[in-house]
Length: 91
Image 1 (cartoon, rainbow, N blue to C red):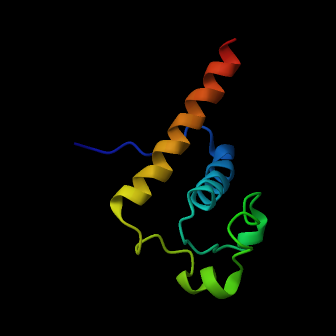
Image 2: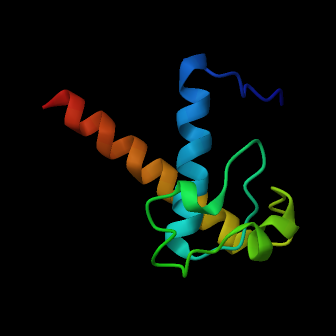
């Protein structure tokens, strides 16, 4: 079966990318911030002890060291937020 992973609204790609790292920070997952991001870019970095490039940068933006459950938690939270945003727009 062919996969259809095309982005319907290309402008949302950066928002989803940012959400991914924000949610990972909220969940306390150690992911690097590739592409010019740093851990202090997220609202929750203070709660995580100001994890800077010394502790998180060594992962280099890779998600491969996380378990499937941890990665799925991030995806599930993104889905919950997308549904909440859609419901707000319907009201």
